[in-house]
Length: 540
Image 1 (tube, rainbow, N blue to C red):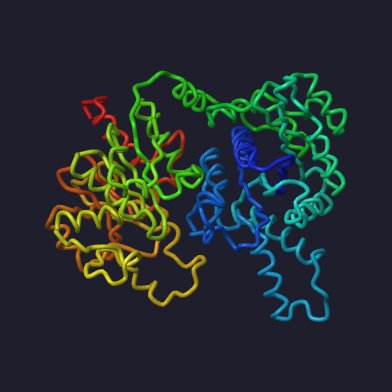
Image 2 (image 1 turned 45 degrees about the vertical axis):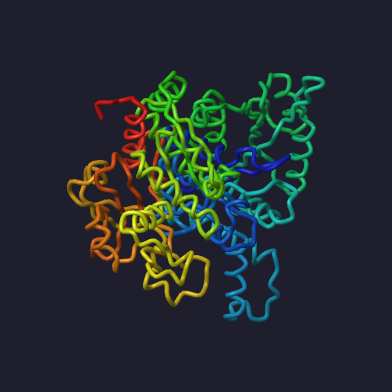
């Protein structure tokens, strides 16, 4: 079968949910029997988001192959339950770097390098790579930014050309817009959508469907008005009203004709009847009244919740599986460094410390680990969260008062966390960490082994520093169990504190592999311990 492409563009304003729409649409098509992949086209000139501040870009989502990608790829993987690879995130930086590299090699000798055709041809080449690399029958391609952005124009021109290259029966276009609500009159306004579609059409792209986002119900009259002024069928104007339940979106889209419209436009017929029982169960469980647990997320970038979006979702998945309501308290680690800061940890049932870089707020994270250890509160450390747990243990159990990570104090006399040996010669920052999927051997009789119920696992990494083996024996003798190690026993992947209800840290990022219908085992174990601390599930 010829690979089919669905291109998703956005208008009016950014952050209206193109990524979730692409992910949910992909789930609809997968439910009809097709293999699906999704690609994100990002207009920024960075090669990838790996060196970007979480405040600007949110979370960096890491794939099996070590690619540092946009957080939307997390939505794609979680909703569709697929594993993507590096061809699924393309940036302007990657495209120009490749074209310039070819020019320097002499591939274009005698030619003038231009946006059209050289840049657009490279974009199209990378779009076509997705079907070949993943074997997907249908590839959804989300174009970042909004129509009218200067940065997005080469991508829009490239996807316009793809209909000419591949044919109408192999390409379809969805345009996502926002319907603002005027409180004084109680009206939803369609004019921004009209202008957005006009801008898209002026580029040469005519949408096959328009998805209209709104915080308020969209009636048939508004749909017909948009259809008239934007030259699409009324049934192709798809309302998508904001829902507080993220995983309800595929069910809401299933109630619209969008899947049938897309298959018709691509000359396809559904192979299977969609079965949404699993998703309906998830939504029903979210809506059900449940006992509440309070978990403190102690991070450095908590002002922007998207910086920890996979952590938040993995916690929600585990909470649903354990039949509890998650009340997540977002605490800035720097605030815990104040004299009275630890009072914010009173009445929490669990503490999770996610990853991060740089020394700001580190002492607050260490204090959170101390509080959890001394008060027998379940603690889960992710990457940096594991490292500060080790530093805390070294300082307060081993009495190495000046123990630290070499990342934060190069002159520390006790670098219990140190640079990985292969990182000593690295000078460039981008894409040079230990990235991607690596195996981990689990020790018998540990909480990690009990959670996974297998001997060997593979998890996604993103770090430069690790537990220093020079201190490993001393730490273990004092009660820090190295419960997960690399197959050659050189790297500590999981550490846990002996004789504690649950104090465990991972060098990897387990949140990247959690799914709404299949929560990650370590997150499930953590929430079980949290529930027990809260007086729920006492038989655990």
